[in-house]
Amino acid sequence: MMLLIPGPVQTDPRVKAAMAQDIAPWDNDTRPRYAAMRERVRAIAGGLAGTHVCLPLQGCGHFIVEAALRSFVPPGGKVLIPSNGNYGVRMTRLAREAGRLPVVIEIPEGQIVTAEAVAKALAADTAIGVVSVVHSETATALINPIEAIAAAVRAAGRRLIVDAVSGFGAIPFDLAAHPETDAIVFSSNKCLEAMPGIGFAVARIDRLEACAGNAGSWSFDLSDIYRHALTHGWGSIRFTPAIQALAAFEVALDIFEHEGGQPARLARYTENARVLWDGLVGLGLTPWLPRDRQGPIIVNMLQPRDPAWELQRFVDLLKRRGFLISNFSTTAVPTFRVAAIGRVFPEDMVRAVVAIGETLAEMGVRKREAA
Ligand SMILES: *Cc1c(COP(=O)(O)O)cnc(C)c1O
Image 1 (cartoon, rainbow, N blue to C red):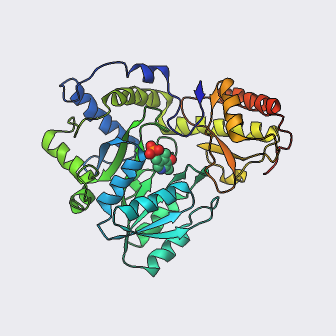
Image 2 (image 1 turned 180 degrees about the vertical axis):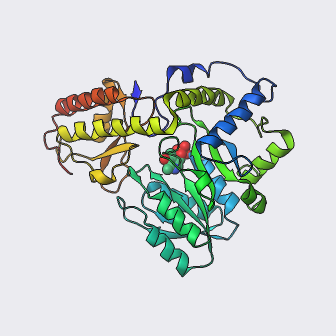
Image 3 (image 1 turned 120 degrees about the vertical axis):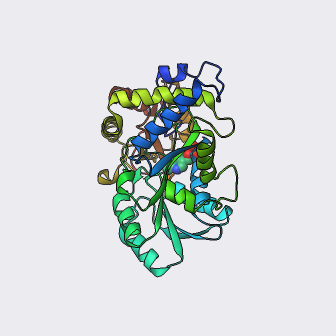
């Protein structure tokens, strides 16, 4: 079975195999490897030694987004969230339930967050200290123009948190060029092609020190993870980690580096998405986004209008042909999505398009244009 979902993604057999062992996290063989992994991840983010640190946290992407909001937005503090999809909505709820005050810029799905909108909102409310934005909006496939947004935040003298969960490792963001950014957050199981179980923040040391005590949660306190490293060493892990997922992550990093790092991964995913887009359009389906806004992470197609169409049935029949896609729509207008990320290659995408065509034919879906 090949997973074509935007996380957890299809992984290399070597990544899976690395899980099949028992490991003590505090063991002297484990500690240097864990410390080295943190340095490698910091480097992928463009983090500078002495300025930035890599802070792993047990759990999923959602948890590390919460940890960043809690750690860098003070309790009761205002955080600007430009929202143009599901993950912006989630971020807003996370901030509110953590007792922060989200100030939301509502942007229609399918339209990008503009630097102008961010600058205007910051000028209108000087009490907003932090902007938190989704880089790759996984619900819609849209990539927000993070460089321009970050420049607007920097010009306004505010701080930035970047949710890069679905793009990190493929879509570049260079922390060295972003002094306004407190943290970039992501997880092990999307473009880094490892197992789920670990969230990561690469964060500024000065801000971790300045914001210590903000979190109101021991578990989700990034400054506490930093302090733990200072006290116990960078190879020490605070609380029990998903240690097998960490072992797999190390192998996934080897594969990432061997492939050619971020540029190579972006090139492969871009080609995957192009093959999917062209192939699905060739089957008569209608893409949800215009081509110039289509990102390389997933491809969303409008669900066909034909009465023979039913998403769950489509997913089940496609699964019999070896490909598993999401069985839900993540956009207001019903769509289905096929991910271009994971250990999958353009030739796999060609096979997936063939399988989708066969499945539509088997279902008798003839009217394939927009629902
Ligand atoms: C996947 C994702 C998350 C949440 O990650 P989980 O591991 O599913 O909790 C957050 N933000 C974005 C942009 C994502 O794509």
